[in-house]
Amino acid sequence: MAKKILLLGHTGKMGTAIKEVFADGYTVTGLSSKDFDAMNFEDVQDTISRHSPDILINTAAFLGIDPCEKEPERAFRMNALYPKALSELSNKMGFLLVHFSTDAVFNDSKGDFCTEGDTPCPLNVYGATKYAGDCFIQALAGRFYIFRVSVLFGKTPKDNQFVEKMLQKAREGQKTLRISGDIISSPTYSKDVAAEVKRIVEAPMPHGVYHIANEGKASLYELMKEITETLGLDVKVEKASYRDFPYVGIKNTNTPLKSIKINALRPWKEAVREYCREI
Ligand SMILES: NC(=O)c1ccc[n+]([C@@H]2O[C@H](COP(=O)([O-])OP(=O)(O)OC[C@H]3O[C@@H](n4cnc5c(N)ncnc54)[C@H](OP(=O)(O)O)[C@@H]3O)[C@@H](O)[C@H]2O)c1
Image (cartoon, rainbow, N blue to C red; front, side, top):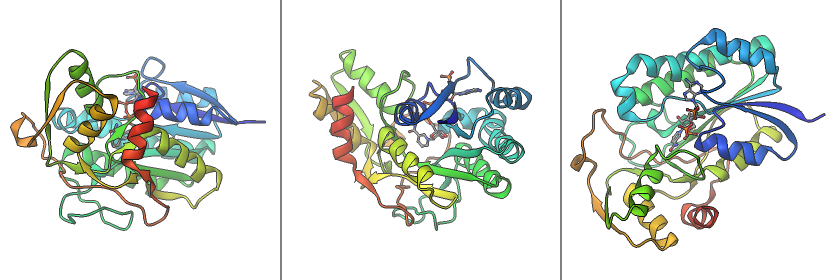
């Protein structure tokens, strides 16, 4: 019988990719905030009990540096205490816990790719609460994978993230997009991440933390220039500094990811070409 996956956060960017990739060979049930509240742990327990999954893939989180900075308690509950609750439930109910984390757990001090061997030291509430979630899972869950990713591009029904917001502006006729050239990460295609997650889970590779990234690093400016040019959009992408725009939390500005456990995925520009064909 096909293994049962409960996908919490199926309407998001990672959830959309996971749903597509795991449709082959698994029975996937996707839930979002319409179906359960990740901030209410009784509701979380009841929801998971009803589905009794073999594998629980959690992509639900409170995202963004500034939103988390403005609502730190909500950020801690969602990004740290909710994964803690999932860890405890995974032991009690026997499911494999698959969770996502972020390059924002690192600061800029290395000035180079951050690997699983580097010690996190977050600069902002988002990074700190996500790192707390990683720590709870590592300390408590018996069977788990934590996949850290950097800025994602990929199909999504939402338009609340960086790439989608910029594309929206271009489609509305804005002629120039000013974008930070001083925030460096490893842009990564959500579909490539989902395929790699499936490979690791099925292998199965040893439980633990993995960095998953397309090969290379780039600024947000370089990423959007590549996307808009590949799509042939009539818009000029201009290099700016993140300091040119209002912001609240301290930004991690140089935290590209690399793995010392698995091979890098294809180069990010190659992945952008497929993404642009897909949308
Ligand atoms: N996107 C990136 O660039 C990026 C970069 C680094 C790390 N990550 C990590 O990757 C993971 C997935 O991110 P994503 O981009 O897929 O996020 P996303 O597109 O914002 O999706 C978030 C999902 O979580 C659900 N959700 C939010 N609050 C909820 C609540 N209180 N109860 C239940 N469900 C709730 C949303 O449901 P609704 O649609 O109903 O709101 C949605 O399905 C996160 O752990 C994030 O930290 C993402």
